[in-house]
Amino acid sequence: MAGHLTIFLTRTRGSFWSIRPARILWAAVLGTQIVATLIAVYGLFMTPLGWGWALFVWGYALAWFLVNDRVKLLAYRIFDPTKAPLLAKKPLDLTPRIATRAYELYEQRVRGKSRADQDWLEAEREIRKDEATKTKTA
Image (cartoon, rainbow, N blue to C red):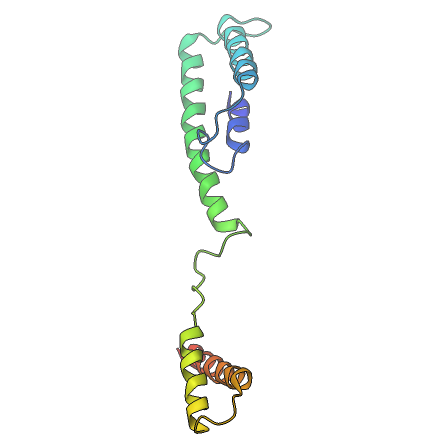
């Protein structure tokens, strides 16, 4: 029972119900589970278990199936390399501060010859250095 339910867990990165499985998969899983349950209940090639134990096993497997689905989602949140780490800081957008500083540099030259590229690079270097020292002291 539990082995077949694992198929439904591993076929999607989201919750098991996020993408409907194909009818052929449903038919194969339900068919084999019904046959296996009947063999266990009525004891073909084994000692019969009875319906009480069969329902207990079905309930136990379904409960752990739901728990495993939640664990899978948590694992994807923690270990997925395509997403930002859970505790990662969001990158700061320094563009407005750099632009302001670049304009200040332009003003300091008394609006002389335009050096917009050099002013931007110098402002960016100053702002990033300032941010780096802030994060080291924090």
